[in-house]
Structures are given as structure tokens and as C-alpha cells.
Length: 59
Image (cartoon, rainbow, N blue to C red):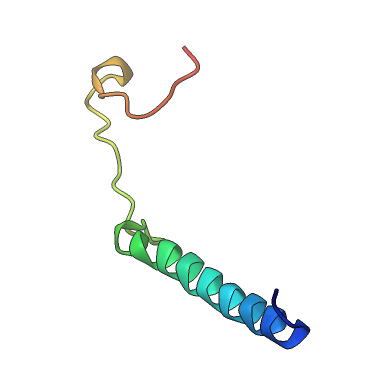
């Protein structure tokens, strides 16, 4: 059985590890983020149907 001090230390270590893990998960995909001003404009000469659909749609 753990003492109160050991339990508090274990919770502190686990909280720090969770914080590091969450920070890494957020940072991991940040290089693919689309920043303001970097969005590509669609070609106005192509019709809407000819553009490839990406992701989920409501259709």
C-alpha cells in the first residue's frame, strides 16, 4: 500500500506525463497546418463537379 506522499508524487508525475503527451500530439501535426494567407484559391475556370471531393460530404 502506498503512503499519501507516494500517491501525491505518483499523481504529479502522471499529470506531467499527460501534459507532455498532449503537447506532443498538438505539435506533431502543426507543420501541416494551413496558415492565414496560404490557402489556395480554386481555379474559377473549372466547374464545381470537376473538383475532387475530400473528406466527408453531406451529399
